[in-house]
Image 1 (cartoon, one colour):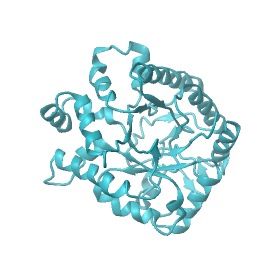
Image 2 (spheres, helix red, strand yellow):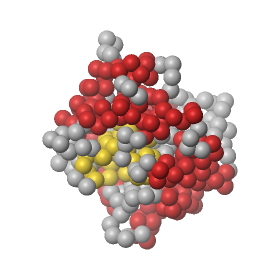
Image 3 (cartoon, helix red, strand yellow):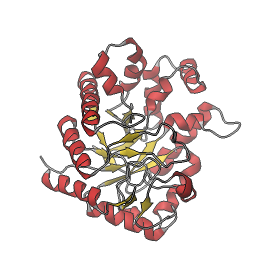
Image 4 (cartoon, one colour):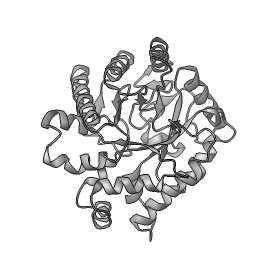
Length: 337
């Protein structure tokens, strides 16, 4: 089937000040910094050596552009194809004092076009720069200032999406835009694509080239079989949306999810947990392969130690798992080229 571009990476680097309170495990290289060249080079070698072909940079706003540069310069990451994962809803809500929603959005989109797109290794699809929007469905939720801004300034959510596309178009070249819609596919599967409470999300999706999911871990934990059943329903719903609207569906998978021990944002009385393990990772790969519409599967994440879905070698709950998850990727890619 030709070359397959598996393995875009989400949530690439953990901030060093969060290790003690937020991490739920220990990296094999210890508590590294985003500026640790040795750790970055090791990460780059691990990705490239195990079939991961692309890095996604978790981008909130223009203020962390310098941080991005520091993670690349002088490390092997200069050679790994890059694309932005723009956390758009949080970006517009978590803006600086005295900055309007519109100003924050314009600054972020400007940084993407003027800085990221100018990188020699910026990722493209059919000559178009790729931009992924994490959890963009959040802008459709009523009762907050971001939603109010969109309703005041645009004639519907599709027009808002078209505005973003226009702002990211450079020299007549439109971006390839991927919309993250959480577990909307599951809702579509259970209630139908015409459910009235999905109207705004579907309207927004129509302005994008592709949609992708994000796992919705159940508080208290569920079994692997329950998780796979829910994930397949999610994939089926997204596949229907993609087919109906002539767009792509890019499945996202994870090795599991376990935020027990995270004292920063997890609820210690009601932690979220999805079965984590090598075989679980393999089964999710196989499921995603059935529903993808293009040669791409995204992985969350390389090293999000705060939510327990990292694949970076290390230790969690006393298990030193080494390269197990990286080997699953390498085997899958090797068997499907």
